[in-house]
Length: 154
Image (tube, rainbow, N blue to C red; front, side, top):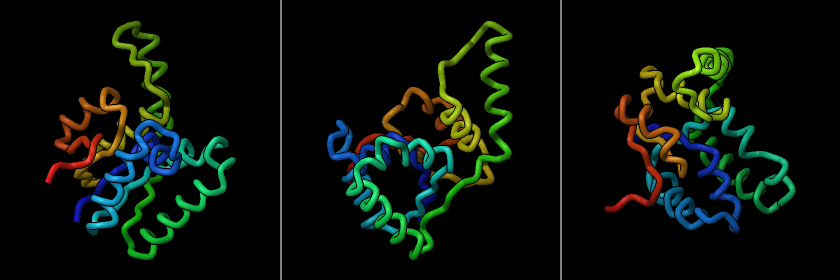
């Protein structure tokens, strides 16, 4: 069983049939969570981004999310990650980069919090699913976390 962290772009694509990554997200979900016993690790900031105004306007999308959420919870394969200890540090990174004037990265606060989570070896993350490879590739490489952005070849 692997601990697989997910990004909002994956979850949004999974529940939005009009998203360009919808099919890839469906295949990944089936492969990694329906057909195996991996745990889905979901940072709370990712939930905030996923369960947005856009998503909740489509009741069917929310129902699909709820169905998967309940199933994974019942199987004890859903782990929400709290961000309380990382919020301030992530915000300080943004402002610190501005003050130094060098190496400024245009990453959202959510992405910065998730990057800090990915850097935490205590979480024992094996993989990270995202369709925004460039925002996380360096930290995943450093931490030896498999970066997944397409269905895995068998």
